[in-house]
Image (cartoon, rainbow, N blue to C red; front, side):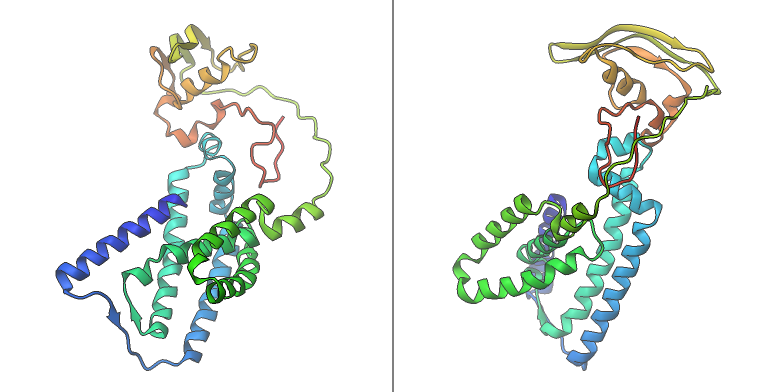
Length: 300
């Protein structure tokens, strides 16, 4: 969210500079022979497209990846999710619909300039609407938009000099009182009791290619040495576990093998070293028993 606000402000400054130094004026007048009724139907059709796209994405591999990223991006990368591609794809899709919305609304305003097109206050209002309804739900932002538009009109009419402060108060209240939005209240009420986890027997897994060889690996975080001169070999076809008390360096070692961390000394020789980070999921041990709160999954 911070990145999008910063990007919007950067674009606003660039467009303003271009308008002043190149075009020698700020703003554009837009006069088109289009009625308010036509704009309404265009926006309604665009809203239908937005809900259809959201419905399809939520049931796609991209939608599942985005839910996991929202829970824990680091865990998502080690669970096989290409986080960069997923976020860029969703950013491009959402930018497309925002661009179309601006193009439809421009004739209604008849005049636009960078301050209107890239208004940080308007962007912040949209974020608050999504948070109130439930950003994780398809129809959640709609539930938040209706009451907040009425509230913003009342605040603007009665407290124009304190609107920004009151907007911040509304944001803080929503974050603390309704962290998952209105939809989250219904989901919590309808959530069934957790079922007992099934017992899953582990079968031997044969791994092709070169075995994993660790030689003299060392990793320190400042004055704390997490892994010191560790060496071991994982032969082909064997399952090997690292056992030790809390703080003994087990997770650090697995992060060194997967490439999430770089060793200070030693080497890790394996065919997995050439894999992209998003595919090294088998080497990541999750510290939490339920890393993805938005997904119906169980971890032993």
